Length: 536
Image (cartoon, rainbow, N blue to C red):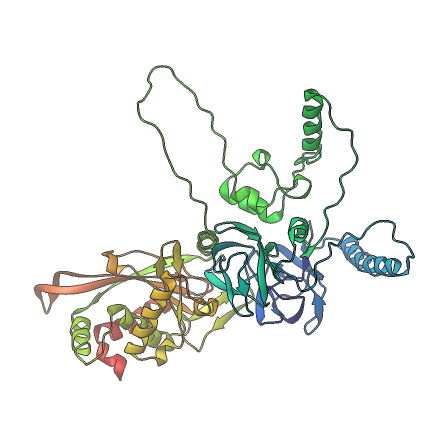
C-alpha cells in the first residue's frame, strides 16, 4: 500500500523546507534507512531518510522548490501501483483548506466556536525538537531550568536524549518558564509539548491542557458526542466492549491493520501480529507496539516440587541510544556481506618507538594513536578500503576521517578524527582523549560523530586478544584491535620472547575484495612494525 511522505520538521523552529537535492528518482527502489533527499531547513541542510520500503512513485517537490512542513513531499509504494486517488486526495485537501479559509472569512456568524485555544500575548509553546535527522522521540535527561525561573534567549533549558546522543537544548525565547510538559526521564514524540515560556504570572493551564502534539499547535479537544450515561454495571461493561470494537485490528477478511515498518520489525523479531494490540489510528499496529510487545506466558504447576527460590529481575527501558545501536548494527550485519581478515603483527619495534617518543618533554602517545595514524596513511594508498556503498554508486573518498569507537555507560559512540592522515601523533592523542572524556559526559556534538570513512575498535586495554566487529555503515571496513601479548615467537630460526598484537578487519564484500583487504593490511603491517616510517 502506498505511503504519503510529507515534508518533515527537521528543526525545532522549521516551518518550511527546500529540497536541495533528490538522492532517489521516480522508479527507484527505496529501502528503509535510504537517504531520500537533502532538505534545507532554517538552520542547515540535512539528509532525510526513508522510514518505508518500496518504489518511489511520485515526487511532490522538485529540487530548489519550497513547501510547508507536513505538505506532500513524495509517495512510496509498490511498483506500478495506481496512486491517482492519493494525488487527487492531496490536491483536494489543499483546496479544501483554502476554501474553508475563504468560507470562514466570508461568514457573518460562525456556526461554532473556533477550535483554536487562544495563546496569551507573549506566550510561546516550546515543542520537543528534532535534534537529529533520524530522531522520532526524545527523553528529557535533565532540566536546567525549573518552573518560575527566568529564561534568556540562548539559555540551556534542558538536556535531551536523542537516538544518537544527549544534547543541550537552548531557548530561542526570553521570559519565565511557566510550564514543563515532561518530567526528567520521560519521553515524547517530536513536536510534543515540552514547555511553555511567557510573561511571569500568565495563566497557561488551558494552553497546556489542550495542546495537541500531532498538529504542533494549541487546540481544543473535540467535543464528546452526546451519549446516555450507563446506569448499571452491565451497561458500563457493554459500553467498554463497544469501545473495544471500535478499534479493530483484523477485518472480517483476515487483513491486519499494520504499518509497513511494524510489519517488517515483527518479521525480524518473530512476533505474531495476531497477538499484538495496536495503539495507532483505528487500532493500527505501529512500530512502538512491536518494540513494546512482550509474549504472554502460561504458568503451570506440576504439584510435585515447590522450589524455595524466587525468580527476580529488573526491567530497564531501552534508551534512545540503545535502540539506535540495535537498529543500525542489525541493518549492517544483515545487509552488508561481511568477511574477516585476521593478522598478527610483531610489536617489538612499536614498543621501543613509543618509549622513545614519550621520552620527549610534554609528549605522550598511545598504541591506539599509532594504529589510527598508520591506518590513515594506509588508507590513502588503498582508497577502495576507504570507500562507501550506496545502492546506485560507490563513493571513493579522497579524504580520511577515522571513527574511533568509545564505550559509554549506555552503549557505544563513534567520534571521528577528521583528516587523520594529516595529523601528527600528539594531535591524534589529544583529539582521541578529548573525544573519550566528552563522550562519557554526553557532551559530543552530532557533527563530531558523523562522516567517518573507516572505523577502529580497540578492546586491547580490556585484555581482549582478538575479536570481530560489525561494520559501521556506510563504511566499507572496520578494524578490531586486540591486546599486545608477550609470548614465545620464532626469529631468525630461534625461539625468543616477543610481543605480538592480533587484528581482525571486517570488510564489506560489495566494495572490498579479499585481495584488496589483504594488500591494505600488508601496508598497515609495514607502518606498525616500522613506525619510524610514519614520520617520513
